[in-house]
Image 1: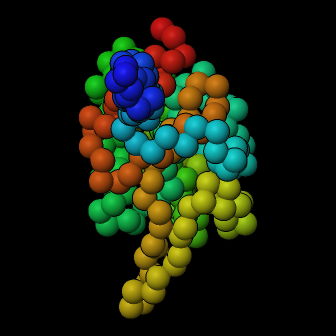
Image 2: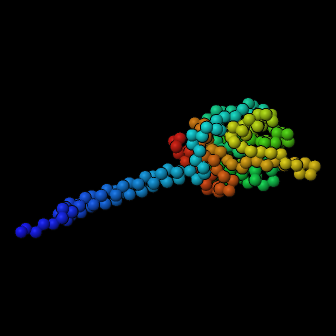
Image 3: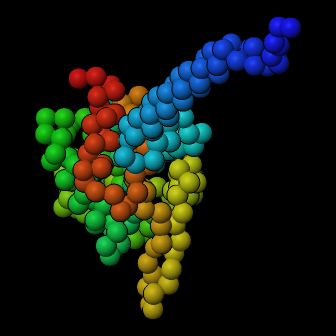
Length: 216
């Protein structure tokens, strides 16, 4: 009598081929997934600051420069704009931010003219246009300070999600404020938020990345 085998054993070679195909597909899926993750990480790493491309805030401002001229973001179209909120009597954070920005200008070399630093005062009560002009010139003559009424500055700060607050200090006061620096591309779109603790290298790299996007 012929010997019989269970159907499952008779199908073993086919099952092996099936599992081999599954393993191959699984490996391929793993490789493709790893590639996708690598591309995503690469794209995320194009800026050293926080990539806020497409943000629904930071669209514009309506302020006055230290020459008394009305200014909007569109006035600086064609340049990368670095926007910072601070005040003249700031003891250390603002001078550090402006010194770093001046170092970025130096590192850009021939491209320095394609970067515009805008310093928005959060202390219009004391930061008069002549004082702002003198203060900014001490860091770099290309830097521009912006001021306005208390309401205009509040509106600008709100648009950029910047916090500031007057803090009494004896017979005077100081200002607490957000210490981020914002970068706009030459088309006027908000792209990057750089943290205060980041380096000159980080700031320079992100400015150069935006300039490279815009072309030589």
